[in-house]
Length: 373
Length: 236
Image (cartoon, rainbow over all chains, first blue to last red; front, side, top):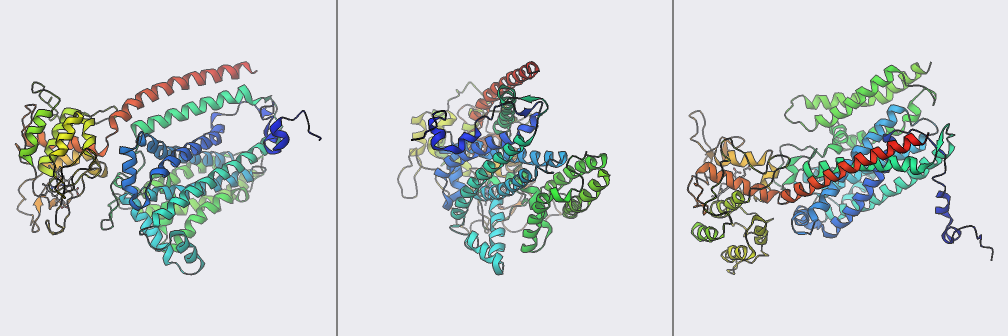
């Protein structure tokens, strides 16, 4: 019987969480900006999506997807509120993730020793895109229906290994039973998002432990106060969107029931899928589109190695200018698939896609190498 | 249909005959528009009357139950009365828990153009309120340069101007119990208000809770930021 009496009852039996104690020891650097709290906000939004998604899943009926969401919004007590949390939660989560990634690129936070944290963030983004698209398909609206139909038909029509995966995923062309499968994938991949967030948390902790702060402060009350304020403002923006602009960034045509005979005039996806969907639309074949999306994420993941300057290297003026252009480029990508009235939007999409890859594959190595000198 | 509902609603209208509809037609607007909008229940009740008498024979509104009418200010008894006066396909009277009776229009009726379900039509069309209003008031004689397709009617509010729906409202299609004159613009505006409610029945509650939530979070944010600044100042 050699129980360590100093350890708590739980820590002596389950040692893992014990490692996490001492979080609030004075080991953190002072003065981090509010935006450094984005990962906490992302985790908060993900948990809210999980909780609201659980309630929605209880009532969702994949045989009548659209009608069952109508049922939730109209006939389930506070159902409209829960559904609103889920829909606006997705918008807020994606906004926070886009902001986080952009801030990381701007600050060159992906350089050693931050590569793993960066890779986990790109993985989080990739998973969220998939979960987000699945949720969009589950909405079973007039626009989402066609997105799903196209994807399922294309994926099942592929040859070789890709076709095997596609047929396994969709179970055949869009039809009875497709949404039931997707509901399962939506939920399972959402749990994978949480797992990724957990790994990300461990990795950021490890980074923080390596850092030797010049002016150490303890997490509480210094950073708990900041985190609380960040959450309050996040919730405020959330509430404004949810209660007063619940459909912001979403295609209004998707609020009608799906119709297998009518293709809506505007087929734009929710804003957070738009840049990716734009890149996919540039390629004329299914494999091409899949390749485009994977390449889009792959260049992000490869950033730590595309950046040729030393980790501590300063950001030069040209680099910062390019970041501004990249921001405009991604916004342009999203916008170019949302505005069918613009006749040149097709060529703009191509141009923005080319610029995106040009930025990461050519300009980033070039400029960072030049500015490192 | 029309003869059945008018007296029922005449008895049921919450808003007494003295309270004429305020003029929402010049300039055209609806109380539910805007960030803080709420439904004008009198207008929505009148719009329901128009829907039941002039649209329900062709258009379903399957997302609605008769019990939902209570949200418009009808008492449970009045809503039950309205439901009971509807004969379902099997001949039985409808109850509060039935969805609005589906319209049975044969597919061949309008040259293949099926009347869509109206429950969410206003959220499915950009600027749905104005869209429906302009559609219902947009029937005119076709200009000489336009050749109408068979079974189509000229409508300035419809994309392409040629719609398969015959003009449903002409003015005085209903008798309003609150004494409002049932002109075509009034009927069109009221039924548009009803369809706005049907597309987004939680709007009132959403805005009500929203104002409180936003005010609360605003103060919370201010206090949280002030606290954080104080703590950061003191942790020198």
